[in-house]
Length: 164
Image 1: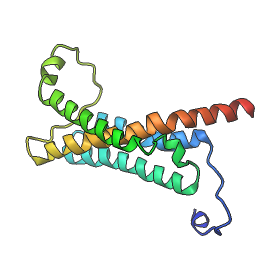
Image 2 (image 1 turned 180 degrees about the horizontal axis):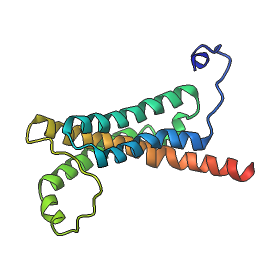
Image 3 (image 1 turned 45 degrees about the horizontal axis):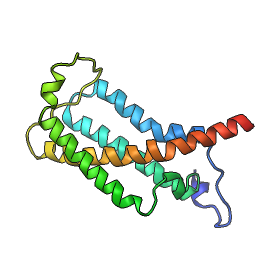
Image 4 (image 1 turned 180 degrees about the vertical axis):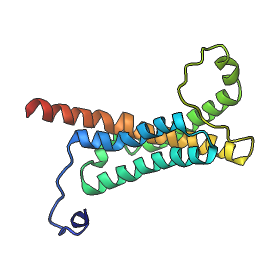
């Protein structure tokens, strides 16, 4: 591992296979979902939730730096940033209004099918920060990974698998 950081400027690290990239980027989300089954206290739940998304972004930055992924893999055009931020804000506010408004009423009409749970953060500032920051973080990380990078990685994996 140390040798990757100390390679000469002319040497390029070997590219990771697309299947390894998919696993590396998806693992934090899967671990977070499993943690929702077992973690019931607010502080560890927040640490796991934000930690998994942060770890995923750190992995993404590392893969971009190594050259395993390129900026075109993100599928964000220059004009797309304004739209991304606008849509993220609209989706966040819409989600907040739904959760704080008709969401509880509508969920009472649906059968209980959940496996895990999200602990209550109480009515304080942490609850509000989590709704705004958490929903925005979810929107950005999941859109970039699942709509941007994953389709390209799956296509790359299929090409290698079918041609190899």
